[in-house]
Image 1: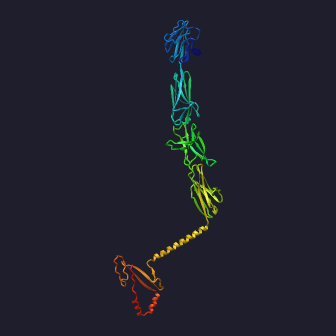
Image 2: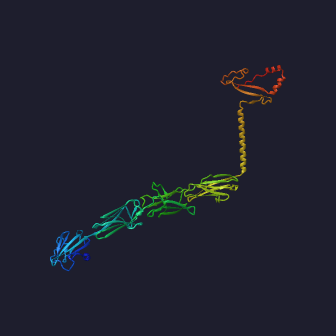
Image 3: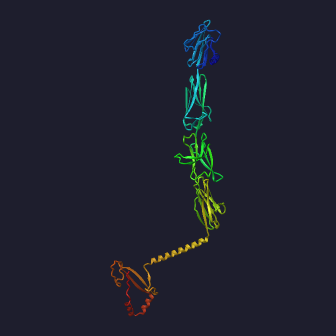
Length: 537
């Protein structure tokens, strides 16, 4: 049934394509068939006369002879036969049947009619296939590659005669752009360092130049890419100071990445695990945590997973959580009527703590004004109290709070009056005066150590005379050798010290006594003068 239909269609094609070339004794016809079709090559189609004998030749060689008077089918090739009108019938053409056929028909009256038929046997394109490597196929057949990789596109098919192959691309910024073409059974196209702009639909077109039949094969290619940078971790305070918003963003990835917020629980090198707070396929993930799930010293991490990353790798950002620690002097003293500045430093908390100054056991907020001045210099928080009075004495608190904990620094302020300082100053002055006087006296005595005034031997001093004590080393000097005999040396090896007491009369008594005394009395006085006392130490 199928062959009959094909034959009718072919006959219609043949007779429609028949056209005289020159004169009335020759024609030229072109036929294009596919393998397996039945070919009917016409010879004499000008009139209704039946040829007596018809001879068919191909490429200068006779292939069959026959006609109405003497049909001569070829026993060697039953596929070929000459019909009564001189036409050549070929059953099941094959690629080798193509060529130029020439017929000669002998008509009544010895008229010879010539006809030329060009038979073209074509097949395909068929079995057209495309491949992209290296690529990963999704469930819907879409192929994916990673940015920066080298990708090969191959197209192949079969056709007779040889086909024309073309690679074309249709993307976001281009449409049906021809990439490469060739004539042959296969075509290879390669992209080095593929980029996201190469994402789109790739089509291989196989075209038969004889039959003009074409086959298109398309595939969609996605270029996965991820940013080189790590995600960005941020925090934002909540209305409740014990809560906090954590946000993680990683823009620029295709397809959309998967983000996780979690707490590190162990050593990463030893295969750490995590407690996941939130996970979602998105490029921006937020989570709000409270004080009950956060602890001092833990590390909060945001991880980004993406198919463009190497297996087992991930991008992440993190920060350690630390409770506040306000630091400063716990005691302060000020004089009544002066100003004082209390200082508190808090620079370790993560997330940063909210630090304020408070007063009293009830920790009442301090409102800036004419009495209090609040200032902040980086991590240093200052409270200046103006014109201090006794009412300002008491405890002050440097209050630091972040989502992990509340910590305070207690500072006690003591206010003293001016009278308390006056007594202390006077006491210090008197003590300094006594110490200075003692130093002066000691220095004076030390400088006069070679002259010491003695009494008369009875415990009291005479008004008109004094004794001078001279200490002389016996080995060093020979004083008064004429009047004071040398003592014999002792046998114990110690030196002997001579002490000579000279009585020095006052000038007044000396003048009076000299004038009132006779020469004889003066001589007696001299003779009766006691010798110098010798004292051995």
